[in-house]
Image 1 (cartoon, rainbow, N blue to C red):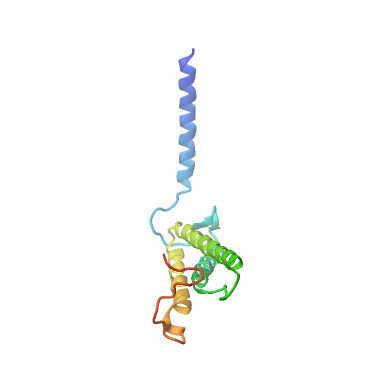
Image 2: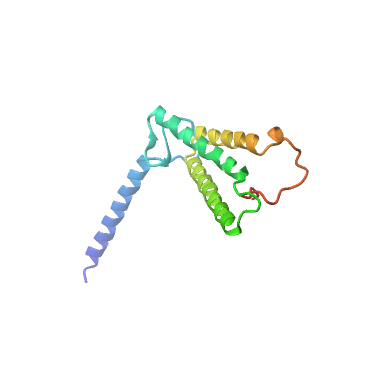
Length: 153
């Protein structure tokens, strides 16, 4: 049995792994907040160096965050609906809301300050328009347990 051959394979495998790490290191991913338009949001190499694509990425994050708030408030199931249909509609809405919330979270993991601020602003605007008392015609004196979909954490 040739132990030198096994050791050489391990060494070459280790060197190949080291080269892979070096390549990944060149495509550095931020682990702290940073400011700038050169970022990756949701997809590899997107938006890249383009300011227009960066603005589009910010718009996408804004829309997704705003939709999460809208879906958290809007009632699509009417009282008296069949239980199975209402349950399916609620499940689909929940799926959309959670899926969008996860996509926003993944976009925030780019650690780009602009993405973070846009997501916060969109959530705040959505909350103000749909869930705050600013536009409520009748005062809410009690907790509504039948919200569709539920907004409780």
